[in-house]
Structure formats: structure tokens, C-alpha cells
Image (cartoon, helix red, strand yellow):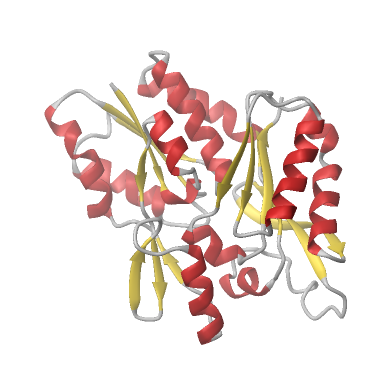
Length: 282
């Protein structure tokens, strides 16, 4: 049996996790001296409140090696294989810790750790595809090979409402020239080669900027794989989310339009009001 695992940055909803039988390894969120497990005992809204009250951004940390070993314990007594997906290795130690856990447990021949070179449902798109391949009977090695081919086709980008969280977190290069602008700027941030980079600046109300951002991708969306597209947000007004959904529906292209809420780790770095449309290029 091939088991599909992912760290919590994949931002898949509980419904999708259950549907595809995915195991989720939580990362950690630190609010001051207090430590929480992402998606287990802290919500994005709670960390936003803490951030506002303390004028500080939460810190995040990868799952520990011992945490990961607990998910691999069942493999000691059978021949199960594991395919594990992590956030980009340039953003977290999650990938390296998963490899160390497999080595510690002498399971490296049956544990395949995938550096997604992505984040949020950019990871989630790969996770779901891997689960589909596992259900079709592919081995762990075969799935890992398919993921190596798929990784470069994932398109992940988002528009942020506030630059504060990204700037404090220090994980997005090229933001300094956007800070201090007199006009309200909502940059488009894209994940390229495992790192975040600002691509375009939108000005005005967030609702207008988000729709402009999605329309800018129309040609790529129409040329993408049809099976699914994600709308992933960190807490946006319902009207904004529904306007994006309506636009994607109007393209009459996707079999499934999935909406997910970003978890604590991703929300800690992008802040409230962030929305992204994520898909796989055709």
C-alpha cells in the first residue's frame, strides 16, 4: 500500500483530506513563547488577533524529526510505502526533516520525500494527483517520478491585501521597493523555482485588484489542465471569493473549482485578505 502524506502547508480542506485519504503532518506556529500545531490547536483568525495586539508577526517552524517518525511507524511492521510532500525546501526545514526521519527509521527504500518547490495548494495540487495515482495502483517510486515531471507545471500566485506580514517574514525578495508607497498597492506574488517573487502591482480596492489579477491569467487558465483549480484565501470577504468563483465558472473550463482556507503557517506569512488561484499548466 502507498500512503500519501503532506505537511500542513498544503492547505487542503478537511473534506479533501478525507476524500483522498491523506495524512497531514502539522508544522508549528509560535505566538510569543506559546507553541501551537498548525491546523490542530490554532486558527488563522486567532493568530491575526495576536498579531494585531502585539504588533508582531507569528513565527513558524518545521515539524520535528520525532513528529514525522510517528507518521512512519506503521511502516515498520509491513511493506507500506510513503510519498511525503513538503513546502519548498528553500522556505522550511520540513523537507530535510522528513528525509532524516526516514533515514532514522531505516525506511529510505520505502519513503519518497517530494520537495514541492511550492506552497499552499500549489503543494495540494500535487498531493491530490499523487493520491489519484496511488489509487490506480502505482508504486511509491513511480508516483515520485511522476511528481518530478509535474512539479514545474504547477502555477501558484496570489494577491495580498497587506505587505506587512510578507515583509516581516522575510521570505519574499524584492518587496522593499513596494513599501512606503503613498498609494495602496496589492502586489501579485508568484512562486518561481521554489521562492516567492513580486510580479505585478495592482492599485485600488482589493476586490477590483483580485478580479484584475484573475483576468490577467485568463489565457493560462484556459490552457491549463481541466481537472481542477483552487481558490485559496487567508480570510477574504465572501463577495470577493464568490466573484472569483463566478469568473472561473464563466470560463467553462474546469471540472472542479475548489475553495480552501489557508492554514496557520501560510496565513502567518501572507496575512489576512490574501487570495490566490492555483492550477496546473496544460
